[in-house]
Length: 319
Image (cartoon, rainbow, N blue to C red; front, side, top):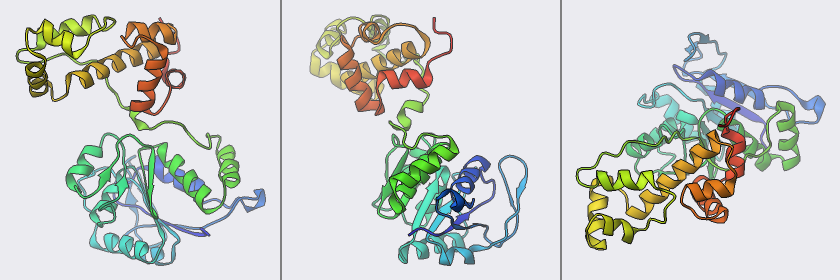
């Protein structure tokens, strides 16, 4: 049973995520029927740590406090390229070796990677940093789309509000769904969010810049509602389909089919956010043909539905 929690803070700690951890694990809510935790915020030497918000975090514990914790969490820090001190990495490894939960929030995953705890494991971080995490720790299996990942007793989360999702997931694991739901209500947050962080990635329509295919791609972008296929695009480019597919990948880095679906998804997302069109009309306008096909691609690529996406991102005054 989870009873003892230690959070490691490093220079330029992110205060929102640290506050989330304090909210979930640092308050005694036993009078409300919720579990209470022996909670501590730790720095390398027990000294104050500068925050990303321009003030210092005063702490009362050094890393020795992590030796008895059932859960050791690394709060996010500003610079993913920063390598935590060896004492932090050793404390994380010891916690894992003795069977404690080890959790990271956002860029805290880079500390787990430096400790070798992500090797061969599924993990995540904020979508802005997933490529860097993969680059620095190629043995890690980085999933850029999810809000959080549990692999064994290693738990990693994406950025900001995803720390709430990961914390509630852990509380469900250690206590019960009822306890996690009760805490979520107390915090006025949903007990479980559908979808992943792919839906939050900024993906504006981009200008086409290709050496030879730019006129074709510009024409396709202007007529996404038409039934384009790889064969029809190859015909417009005056190439055999196989030659066209090879040339397309060379110039865009994607297959013709994947590029076409991606552009249609971008248009559909923009229309869901900024227009009052119904889902059927948006599916037609974006070239998917039917709402069912649009829902299929939203589920596959964003792990959500068009309706749920619109509810989250729609402008207050659609045009």
